[in-house]
Length: 137
Image (cartoon, rainbow, N blue to C red):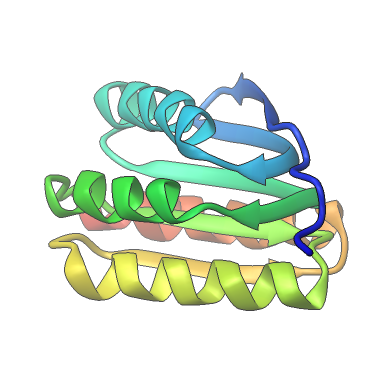
């Protein structure tokens, strides 16, 4: 018997050059398409992407969302950094697998890391901001 599906929801906010995604439920295709539009806006405005993922309420990442991530990433060249905090061990493991595949299959420079707290994740992203800006010079 499969557990009931957890309805998907994502709250997206921009803080200057940072996209904050607060995930609630399964990361499905609808969520991925919303996040793609937000990532495209960051890329257009800044030439890079900084993303903070709140994984405290993350369910799973669906196969169609994983496929869409890889297809989308193959078309991109702008660098980016992703920090996730609060995810369960299984959530971090799945996210690491997906993000590793995206990094290998895409043409862009992408880094990601996992953190226990939002403050730690934000501190790392602040360092990444400088590195990403220097890549664009």
